[in-house]
Each structure stands twice: as C-alpha cells, then as structure tokens.
Amino acid sequence: MSRLYEKYKKEIVAELQKDLSIKNIMAVPKLEKIVINIGVGDANQNIKLLDTAQKELSLITGQWPAIGRAKKSISQFKLREGQAIACYVTLRGKKMYEFFDRLVNIVLPRVRDFRGIPFNSFDGRGNYTLGMKDQLVFPEIDYTKVDRPRGMNITIVTSAENDKDAYAFLKKMGMPFIEAM
Image 1 (spheres, one colour):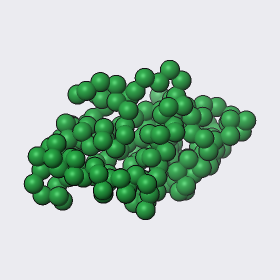
Image 2 (tube, one colour; image 1 turned 90 degrees about the vertical axis):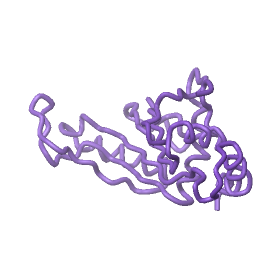
Image 3 (cartoon, helix red, strand yellow; image 1 turned 135 degrees about the vertical axis):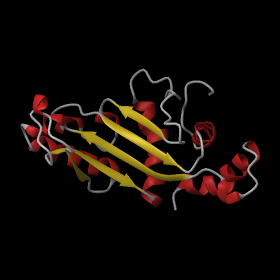
Image 4 (cartoon, helix red, strand yellow; image 1 turned 60 degrees about the vertical axis):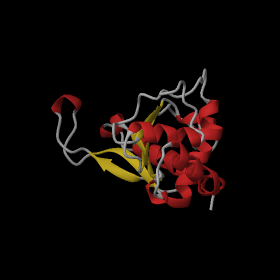
C-alpha cells in the first residue's frame, strides 16, 4: 500500500482513538473516497474543451474521468438537459491515499502565497471540499500545453460523524489547516 496508509494504520489510528476517546477501533475516522470535479461551462459552445479537461484530470489522478451532464435546461446559459458540462473522478483505495499524499505534500505547498487551507469548508457531516483555482500546481501538468487555467473541486469524504472529528483526522493525516477549529 502507500506510505500514508501505512502511517495511518500504525500511528494515526491509535492517536485518534486516544484523542477522540473512541473505544472501538472500527469507529476511528478514515478516508472513504476523494472526488475531483472540473466544471467546463464553455463546453456547450466547444466540446473540445471538455476533452482537454478530461485528459488533464486523467494525468492528475491516473484514472479516466466520467462525464457529468446537465440535470435540467437553463435558457439563459444556453444549456440543455443531458448536455456534457463537467468531468469527474472518484478515487478509492490505493489511488486515493497516493493522491491525498501528493495533494498535501507536493501540490498545496506549490500554490502561490499559500498559508494553509481554511477549516470552514466542512459540510457538517465530516466531509471537506477544497477549491483549486488552477491545474498548473499539479506537477503532472505540462504548462506549455495548457490552453487556459481550469479550476477544480476536490471533495474528501471521511467516515467521521461530525466536523470536529474530521478536522482532527485530516490534521493528523497532514492537511495544512490555517488555525485550530
């Protein structure tokens, strides 16, 4: 398995069990999945933009993205129901831990003027969503081949019951939060 998963099994589980006063080892929070989503709003005029977003997302994650389609028609945006407007990847298992390790140790420190990530992006159920403004912070992307900067949402789904437990878990996993919750 990955380096981060080994650390989780050997050190983090015991520390979290003590810190959060959890008796059952199976109740300790863990990563369930990571979902990376790129919305391509201009894809309704030019479908090639969606193809390049798919290629870049597959380089970043090592997995081919699925296509997200519009759920309903919106005439102001010239959008029809069923039209392809996004691509997303759901990572689980080994790829999930490797992506999380790269995100925390390589990608986030490469963000310009990075001082940490805010802790107010929890959803109330122990999941965290992080917005990236540019795909160039990922080392897999060749900046000479990028036609335009594309943002993405990275959602980290944990098995934690609440935001406090998820915050403690992600902090132990190495997530660089700004201040304590």
